[in-house]
Amino acid sequence: MPLPVPIELVVDELEMLEQGMLTYVHRKTGELVTFTEEMLDLAHREDDEVFEDEWGEEHSPDQLREILDSADWVALPDAFAIHEWEIMRAFAGTLEDTRRSEELQGALQGKGAFRAFKDIVNRYGLQDPWLDYKRQAFEKIARDALDEAGIPHTA
Image (cartoon, rainbow, N blue to C red; front, side, top):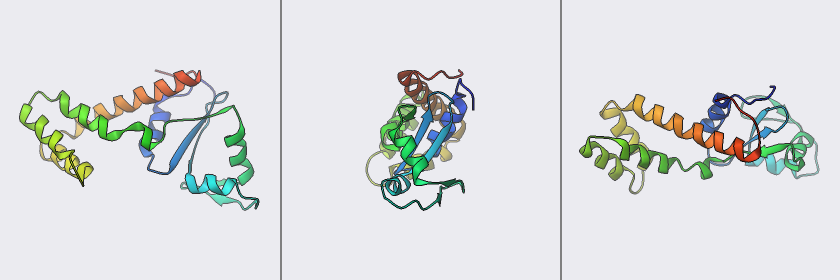
């Protein structure tokens, strides 16, 4: 894809990330590629076995090595760096209804926090405000990462 990079595409990639997945953007073309850590581990091996990514596209270890070794490819924040828990906490703090805000904040404590948060969001019909807030947070993360790398992007 030619530059500038459409921010929506970067956000879509970041929202799909799970632990152990990494997305790279090519600083000259704007191409986005997402790999699992296991795939990147394979790139460090000597064999040249072609393998498929999560979406059925075939990649060779040489392609992965090129991405890892090239200054033209920039790693975007991974799921660990995105801190979705912090995004949920910040969303809870935006609610005018103090009881709902406190309930969401309380849901973020302990085991099962993500499920509890989602359940409360669904119970109070806050899906649209939550998804809008989350999308805006991911857009800021994407813009900041691209800006830091000097990669032009659309609004």
